[in-house]
Image (cartoon, rainbow, N blue to C red):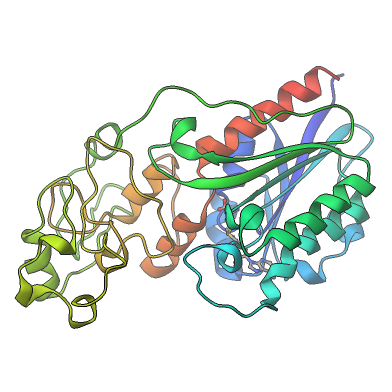
Length: 341
Ligand SMILES: C[S@@+](CC[C@H](N)C(=O)[O-])C[C@H]1O[C@@H](n2cnc3c(N)ncnc32)[C@H](O)[C@@H]1O
């Protein structure tokens, strides 16, 4: 009988990565995250995958391997350590941001469990910005453990995800050379994603479509959005009297109050992506921000993936996720690699 790939997902959130790997045929048995509220969404949408609420720094290799049949399966250790410390948006200069060490916790678990395959995803700043030295340490662990690996900065829009999202991806194998799979020439625009959802008013929730719920807007923000041209625009289109005091002399954050465009992919979704004052998160044609469902669709979650908890949590989980289709590309790659062993 051919061996399967079983996996554990570190920092799993509500399971974007787990879902994508599972869609490729990998059996993700376990997800670990210290956000206990993510458990319900993770488990209800990923039958057969168990969520463990734990700080990964306290997770021991032995515990991770518990219940994993290494003899009859290949084992993939996957993980996306929190990326805020390396992200360009994060302006904090605290050298010793303890979250940075979480990638090295991933490295420790590689040493302790010696997985057959490794998947890592993070923001570009890990490779060429503030996180450089941490990434170097992570790579040296792979070298010392004798892994083959490849890594690259990729943009999810080149992998049929309707979103500009640059990410560092690393693939590793114990057995043979690995190569980051190339993308596709097909660009999926928002027209193909958003037009299928029924119109919605700000502050309302659709009764029939899971999580199709849009944030309420203050009177002033509604006025601003109404004056923002369809399929684009931003605070730069606003008359003086509607520009926020803090924006009057500030050149940055030019996208806020902007709308997405149906003719393009979306900008990078963040953990505030259902709020127009946090980026270009306005609906292309309706006077509201995108709904949680629309954000999830941009992150390539299927419409039956239900998010439990409140809207703030849903938005954070969706914005933080690895786009499902993007994750599936690498799942497929590992499946091929395994079949050629
Ligand atoms: C980028 S998100 C992961 C998204 C997830 N891979 C997905 O595709 O949906 C990072 C996650 O790390 C979790 N996290 C942060 N610090 C942690 C820690 N010390 N131990 C466990 N989880 C942690 C956060 O709660 C968050 O869900």
